[in-house]
Image (tube, rainbow, N blue to C red; front, side, top):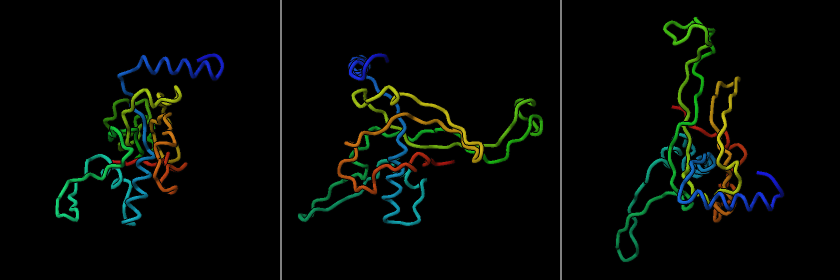
Length: 182
C-alpha cells in the first residue's frame, strides 16, 4: 500500500470491509506458550504437548454452587476464539544425507532427511481484527542447526486480547519457538 500512514490505514479499513464475512487463519503460538505456563503453575511436569492437547479440545467439568445446583463449565481461555490445531512444519530426525545415499528415496540427486511433523495452534479471525496487511501473511523459516522447517504467521495479537491476564501469562519473545513435534 502506498501513501501516508493515514492513507494506508484508510485503504486497510476499506479492504477489511470487502473481506467480510470471511475469516483468515493466523498463527497463535503465544496462546500455546501462555497455556503451558498456566499448566506448569499447577504441574511442573506439564509439557508443550499437554498445553497443545488442552487447547485443542473442550475440557468440560462439573461445578456445584452453594445451593447444590450442578452446572457444566469449560476451561477454554476467555479470549480463545476459533482455535485449531495445525501442522506448521517439519523437524529433523536425522542428519542430511547426500543424494543417492538413502535407498528407495524419491530422487537420487536431491539431499534427503528423515523428519517428523511440527504442530502449533492457529485461530480463524475476522477481518475486523486485522491491523496490518502483514497479519495475513505466512512465510517459511529454516534453521539448519536444528533442522527445523517451519511456517510463521505475521499476526500479532492486540494487547487488548490479554486484558485480565497476569503479566507473566502474556506472550513473550520466546513464544515464537513453541511448537509440538509428533
